[in-house]
Length: 273
Ligand code: GLN
Image (cartoon, rainbow, N blue to C red; front, side, top):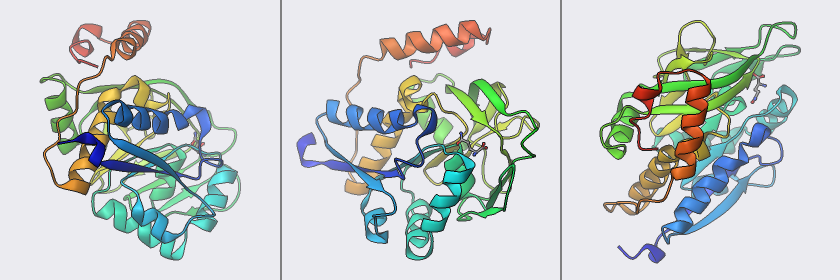
């Protein structure tokens, strides 16, 4: 496969409203790792100036975190044909990574600490409620083991059989309860969806929803490669085998964090990235 013939477009949801805690890093990592393999790539902002057709045109979707006020503005814009386009994309397996405020909007609703409930798109069967402004936020480093069946299996294969652990950082007031949607993983360190049931994030078709900022992908490059690989396979229906990249720095970052958190490093270090 001559890589130059192939191009991916990354749809970036509301870049100015939804990019807290460095979540734009997820976009940069996908863009660079695609370029480094010699594929074409472009970043398409999906915001108030975009149409439903813009949403339909992208191959990967990235959505970052947002404050409650910004989430409200976004949901006022993401209605009608645009909401339908998002639903169609995710239902049909467009890969994506959605962090914190974004999954709250993809669920049925988000109740902010103060003010009115914000209705979500209802694509993910989950609800999120902020228990009030005086409640402690869930803040800190986060380590999870991916348990979503298909993703866990794919990542394990990409990691030569190692268990897929993700390292990140969470900062949210909202507590998320899952309905029938599969959890992304189980919490090894941190609080995850709600600090109670041990679940973290959600996984639907090829959409990864997570409370993990960090941003997620620089610390967990295997997930970026999974998104790229899935997008190429979806778009071109060809076998894809991505050229390995030097992820030494990411691995060192992961090891340092796991040591600091006193997480069972021997187990986690089995992972290649
Ligand atoms: N506003 C949401 C909350 O506090 C999301 C915050 C975020 O995206 N970091 O739960």
